[in-house]
Length: 127
Image (cartoon, rainbow, N blue to C red; front, side, top):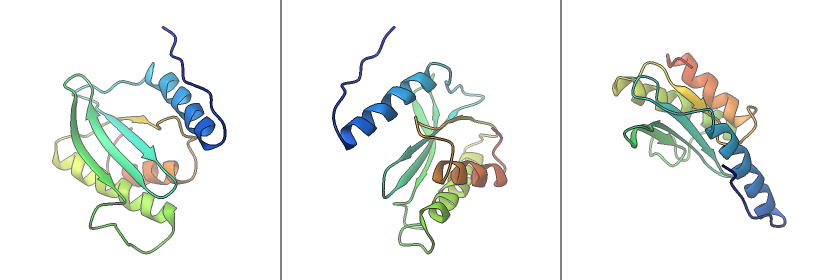
């Protein structure tokens, strides 16, 4: 099945490219009750992580830089991504999740995405 994403100019072109890559990743990555999907959504200013069971269609845990405990925190965006990774791992463990599959959301596995994933691993979440 082919998915079409409208090609545009400038930032819209970049978002369309990320959307195409995300569709490609989602062909192979799906969350189950045993191994839910850890989804990372990145914008220029914020980062959001959610643990989702795709079969039931429920979000089991989530964290973002907009949370009260992280908002206005010290450090650069990578440091804030580490805090989000640790927080989402803590919340996922509280929800009974031990292992997840990682969905990078069409973004490259570098910088803030890698920082979030490494922090979640250090907090005890298995990938």
